[in-house]
Image (cartoon, rainbow, N blue to C red; front, side):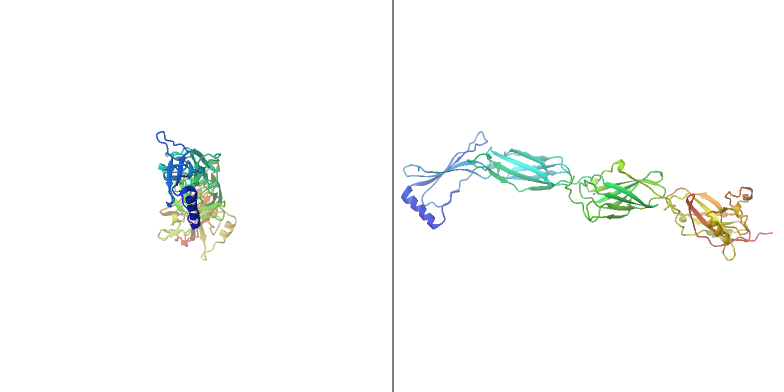
Length: 487
């Protein structure tokens, strides 16, 4: 664009020069000659000429110049007789480089493609323009760097091998002209950077998985989030795999990822049971903790942890990184109920009792067996011999109790218990105490359900075993007194 001076003094001076030196009948000529060749074989840009008389003061705009092209601009005067001025204004000018638009075509987990198009392709034709595109990640590492000749039809940008759930920046610029061309300086057009983020993928394995046994039925797990979360970790899944029990199926529990979402990664997170969890987020590398309940004492478990994003469950840790927990065994929890006496079954040497399987609790380990303990009591509900026997940590048999006038506690019968996790629904088990009349004929240290004494008071309790040396007794039952023998 050619503009006339705006200031009054400058216009007056221009009029004076035009009137007295150039001549009022002379005209001002502007000529624009293209120096950049067209890439078209059928069309070549022609020179553009314009002229203005002395008092034609409107700005002169040269239309339809090619973006990025170099032009020779000449300004001179021509008299009425056609004589051009000897002195001319000459300058080589390059039009500003064209702009391109970069828009997303498809963005996936590890790939992305973008369309590239000229803003105004009709005004672009010079062959000396090039397009430079670079893609960097958030660590400023270049993953794509390419310079190609700029043409009206630009190939899409195809990026592969990207990291899931990562941010990337596309920078682009159009350069027209040669760097060492001093006569027609190159022009550069830098576009606004384009930011994009790849989609989430399944996370990598968690790190540093460890286990700590708390009691026979609980274990505490510790782990660090995956090095490659590949997305926002929504929760974790703990897989519990019993290793020795055919009755126990694999099961899992869910653990929340914590109060803070997984940060956008810029570096190289069945049956469902509610469990206690605590995710420490003060520092990124602090471990996540979770307590797994409902384990069984005496069993061995293999445990693994997987992170979960919206793309799915993550990878397992390597087999060598799996944690194993061998749960300890303790005496069973004390039953909350007692043996019941069936009073209408009391005879002189036997009676019937019953107890509910709701007294069976496998929290400290599978129950191996149960034993019915019988003890004779006096009218004041005491048996001093029991304290002596209890201090020796042993229980007599029916045969061994016969040498005492007041029978101490003895084992009347033992029953194996099926290794079940839960005894549901509960049911009553009935047993007759004193039903075996042959106990006098066997060894005294053999357990035998021998007859009771007539007109004698007894109490009963149930003993439960998780191991031969680990047992727990229920509270004693109410007193039951056998009837007097008929003579």
